[in-house]
Length: 148
Ligand code: AMP
Image 1 (cartoon, rainbow, N blue to C red):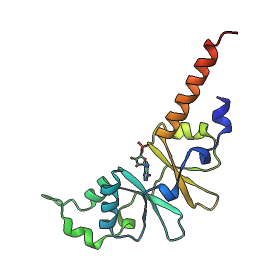
Image 2 (tube, rainbow, N blue to C red; image 1 turned 120 degrees about the vertical axis):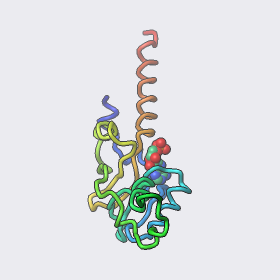
Image 3 (cartoon, helix red, strand yellow; image 1 turned 180 degrees about the horizontal axis):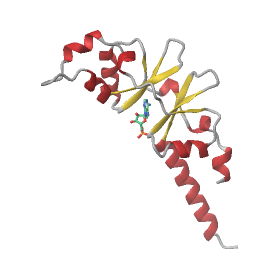
């Protein structure tokens, strides 16, 4: 597990430039479009300084416009992302070890990555972690069957 203590989240994360995200003050309808077009179930929310503020998902949006008998789409117009987002974001510092990422990834499909200032710098996905573990376990396996 040496590798997992040494390697940093920074080395395996998807950088923020490649992550679909929205701003707190974006209309909710915009967030809905980004979620539909990207196909992701949840995406990060940032403020104007690019600080991490929350997560928004399709189910949060739909729940916020759910009437008694139907989904009231017209209510989308009056809302911004901040009104609906989840402020409890699973996050990790970019300099933390993979081992810490492994622990947090048990409960979350992805973690938002931040720097010292709380600026959103990327995401660390369970997929990236499993790929790294797969590589590591296969290497260990090869070494253990190698003739001496
Ligand atoms: P994956 O590792 O591709 O299965 O992604 C797991 C989750 O991480 C997705 O459902 C999204 O919520 C999030 N995610 C992964 N890649 C991106 C991305 N490029 N932009 C935004 N969210 C992402």
